[in-house]
Image (cartoon, helix red, strand yellow):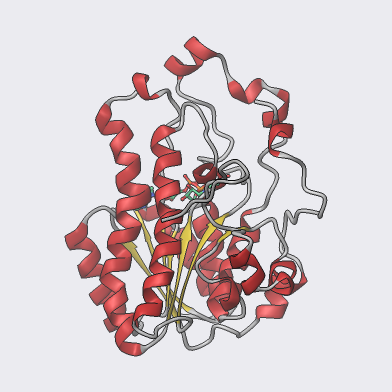
Length: 312
Ligand SMILES: NC(=O)c1ccc[n+]([C@@H]2O[C@H](COP(=O)([O-])OP(=O)(O)OC[C@H]3O[C@@H](n4cnc5c(N)ncnc54)[C@H](O)[C@@H]3O)[C@@H](O)[C@H]2O)c1
């Protein structure tokens, strides 16, 4: 891959929290709210939970891994907020209903939902089992939508809420060997755009605000990991390639703090959009919602040749 084919930003990209979204700027801004974060045992999800806790929200964290949940719980508790951890698989519909009820009882109604849990299996479609391919769609797309379906009636009844879907830049480009991942993330971005429009139907826009985020390239168990040995044997190890070594340079707190900022409602003008956490939110706000919409920015779109439009 030649990274230059995508262009090189002329505005500086952020790699760690900056003034608008810094912990000190956001201190106490989410006090009194309840946030639920999936896949919060490690990596980006753990950073999102900590950022929301530091901004004052009570925290419900979900993950498959109990030990990791406990670690994140301790880190969140150090910010003096209530925290509850739930070992669960986000694709388990019955368990999710149970967890939501428990969260309501123990912490109160959920104000902020962050769909972060995700999986990635780097292999060509033809080297995947169909079930392995489909599992990525289930965890990365079906589960977030299932959680949204469960929570939206409550948010609608209360007339407010914030939903953040951790998508990926991968959902906007074609990346061989990642079919399950790119298609699940593209679907999640499209769902974000369309769901926000559905909020308009019942006068719940902008009270319920929904976002899709690219967290940046973050070195985690997933980000920057090597492919499985059978794939490496056939195609070589992509992690050896020079460009790859420079891709995962963003801290997890960049996404964590962006989520805490969005949860405050300060970024409501960006609702419904796909946001890259490396881009300064102040610059996007300055650009303006109307102009972003008019120019089809920050949205999955198609570009026909001059003269042809994507008409209905
Ligand atoms: N790391 C990156 O560079 C990067 C880039 C773009 C997008 N993302 C997205 O960010 C999110 C977090 O990724 P990460 O890099 O922190 O990965 P990670 O593998 O470190 O963490 C993912 C977490 O999700 C949990 N999880 C996975 N399946 C689950 C399930 N079925 N039920 C409950 N929990 C489950 C895991 O146990 C783990 O704690 C993912 O949605 C990922 O697609 C990451």
